[in-house]
Length: 144
Image 1 (cartoon, rainbow, N blue to C red):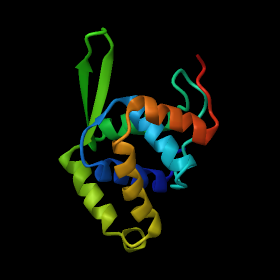
Image 2 (image 1 turned 180 degrees about the vertical axis):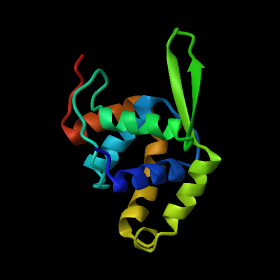
Image 3 (image 1 turned 90 degrees about the vertical axis):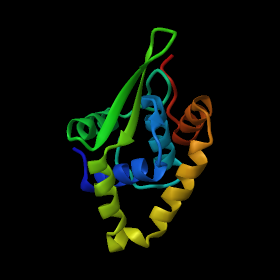
Image 4 (image 1 turned 60 degrees about the vertical axis):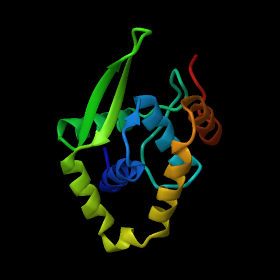
């Protein structure tokens, strides 16, 4: 079951990312790294999957955010025939992010400062780099 802290941290993740996140894999690996390497207290459980660590709970939560109107999901059809799902906060999601940032216990916390710093670093990395790092720091391999 999803915890309130995960909801707030995930909204903060999307808010601090401050741009469209390209791909579900990106979200999965970034959150895994934030949890396992950077000690951001996400409670999502990760397990081995095709491209390394994967959380069904995280995927379900992202889908719920889309259904609730907090995240916008755009589908890009790639030349390979595959699809990429891109995500960004909606206006409603941005408003929730602004409210979360004002919560006194979170606003001035070292954990939120660490979250913003780590997201800036992750944004500069490629998908293969974050995939490799997620496998390494979590110890969870790919299934292929």
